[in-house]
Image 1 (tube, rainbow, N blue to C red):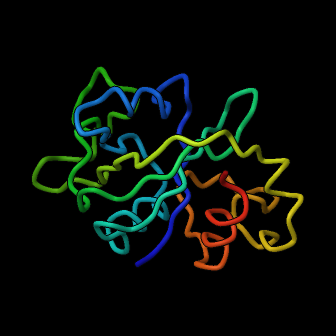
Image 2: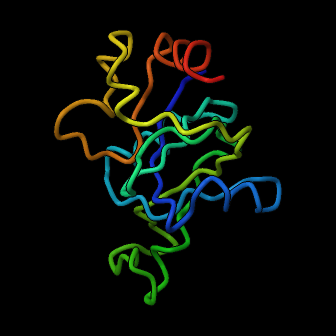
Length: 153
């Protein structure tokens, strides 16, 4: 089992939006970074733990615990010319972009980025590294345990 931190903008799809969806599950569409795509395509497995992270908002932070609910499959938005995620070089026979389905397990009181920074046990988390812009990053099992057991009430 692996663990991931997956960023989303709550103004686009936040944790409350996913909780209102069927099966509390969302297809994680719109990822257009090859490294993040490769994490979804090559490493994510059903049941992997996910820290559901709100970004690009006034108070970024971990908003919930989720899990990978479906293995990678072609991201539908790459084929839609009306979508901001359209990729004219991608075809149904040779898709460039994938997504996984993510199911929210539970919403938690937001753990702000500043709170994560206060704990030396989390000093190596990629989300805390200067210049990190990836929307999906691996989380070390020890970091996951610390967050789940010490920071989530």
